Length: 231
Length: 295
Image (tube, each protein chain N blue to C red):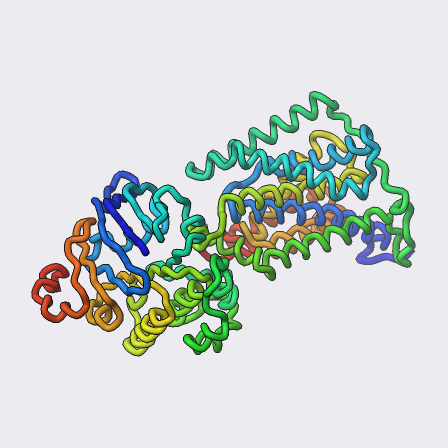
């Protein structure tokens, strides 16, 4: 579904990605693991067209997207939940939820979203999205891209800084949307969490993908993984 | 003749009405400036010149084509709005990656060029624009005579301001605009064509200025400097109301018009400076303006 070959990305003078290669197949949940600064978030942004300069090849459903603008990439059916969550303070919770335009049929409707995230239904009338708790903001950031009909979701550290009970809820949500046929690329620091949701793991270091570990081999690769992640 | 605070009633109410009229123009102009500043991060110094263009285009439509006031209220903002759209597409959009100062310099230069062209063609003495016949005359309100056209201007300005506020605060288009003001790249990553949204926002703000220009044509003579006369006060209004605040611009615009009008009654010497006095006081006590949000 998503094939990335030789992806390079720059922020100004700094060359962040040095030839990233990996692929995500339809219906998979795939994680990018790696230390801070390995280039995981930049990879997500590069896929979405949100870096100032990028080269290489990003094919989505067979079509090359490297020359596209972010809005065209979104229209093609990729949606991002950014690391900083990107909830808008000048918009109400409902406005935040309804903000991303529908790009294709097959997105979840609002009742289904409220079923997945009962908290959001309770908080729907909140006048400023940023008044929500961190966990609620994260749920809103995921919920709003489920509406759009985009089937390829980029989730950048959705569990960062959240209480264990909310991390569990996000884990359930990711498994649920996988069952509904969504494809997920997940950036995660916490490989214990990643293990509960993912099919495969790519390990990044210094702006490159250096290894791929299928989820069922994760336990047997623990030594290797500890070395990669420095934990 | 009845007196209020030792001032003849008709004089007081007359100045109050004049203040409301000026306030109506302050509100409409600062509203457009606020919307443009929010989206483009550019302080549109050409705003006064585009206001003047609105008045001139309606005068030209009447003089050369015979199109009257009411169609002009739609046509002139449309024509000037398209002019603004072309300006943004061809020139202003090149500056978004540079320091804000360049946008300020460019739009200031554009204002000088536009006003210069009109001064060259029409001189600076000004041309009259007749009040449409249905709005001529005055109405006795009991405590004063109100010229119908002035009442009409205040009414239309209030409606236009509230409609603009409602579009921005209550519609999904407005929600997209507010979101893009906060974080344009993310909104674009959701599939919104943000560059087009920016162009249309500029055109919309410009059309609002031109609309105010058409309303102003029968009150002030149509002349190339009419924008400059207003725009200094309007910038003070924007600063007092708080950069980028919609309701702030509207309320502050009307309020300062009224304050200016009342100052003319009670202490005429200060009427030209009172707005700037208020600006100084507001900036000293609330640097973000009365309605500005903390960063």
